[in-house]
Length: 172
Image (tube, rainbow, N blue to C red; front, side, top):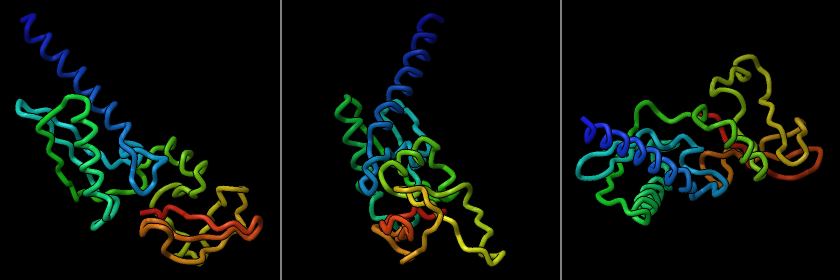
């Protein structure tokens, strides 16, 4: 019985260690965030013959997902893990609701307006403009310049007070 308990304890410690390693893997398009901050990591399963990490793309066809998978494998390999499989999970689809509050603050400090509240933005149904705060001066006096910013998941906005352009991470 003691051997089984040690095995379970070791397994749990290993699982926590794997998650700590994943917390160091940065998003290649937004280097201030990790893949855990983004909510891209869906699951980690340890098997006798290796580790399976399930990831969900921020949107279908996201060009960064292959690189993210390689970075995950590389980070785990550097820490002594082997036989790492990356599994892409498409359902349920990723949502900006999975971005942690800490990650939203990191985005703001980096100069990217984070997605506000929930993905359910009903302003367009009510005929109201979307309000996006400028990450530099916090003004709500902003306007969208383009639906597409530096990446497809962001839109380009401009602050009408401080005149600075900025990306807004779209609610998905």
